[in-house]
Length: 250
Image (cartoon, rainbow, N blue to C red; front, side, top):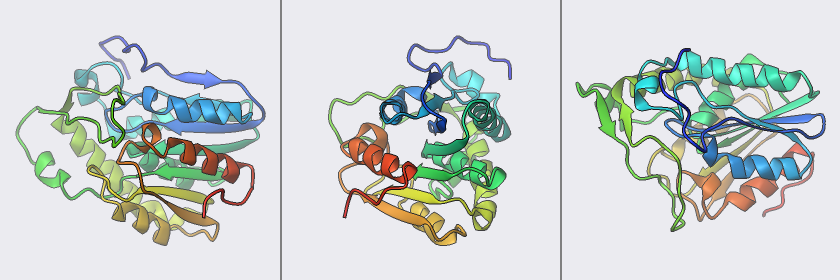
């Protein structure tokens, strides 16, 4: 898609060259690659090749997001998958929030993916229904849902109502695909999440059609867990999963 505004500093895609195991890391709705970079750096330190794409309409200006469809977000991550496939033999995908939703989309679309890591993924947010019915063009974006004090997340200050409608379509489409997902999965879920109800992760866990799956609770983080108290635990558990090792936590 054609965007009319420049990319914000810190919102650029990132790529770290490593071995022939590739990890695609996907940021969330109205967020940027800034939120996923620490996890991406941990994956790279473990030896993996890492790519963090910038989703269409994100990291520039809310007016660019307003012109973007959910299918273009899917295109962004599918392009990222194919990019890693050019040099990597095994591909894993990790995503936060809507990035987790897009991770599930990829798992259904490309069953050759070796494993998925979904973090507070969204498939149904009842609180969105009145928002998508609103006549407003934009809504003010609330402060990032992070328990740890003094943590910054680069996001839009306002969100197009039309984009909430596109998010709703993506979640509905993904719900319909869950039964067809047969890719090994690690599902991280915060005990307290003020954005995506934790029941989303339970539904994902119980619906996907794979035996190699585990749900991992996060006791010290809110929604943006990749920047919160549990970010190291997410990295440790995810790297163990990719390396075929047992869980590091009880």
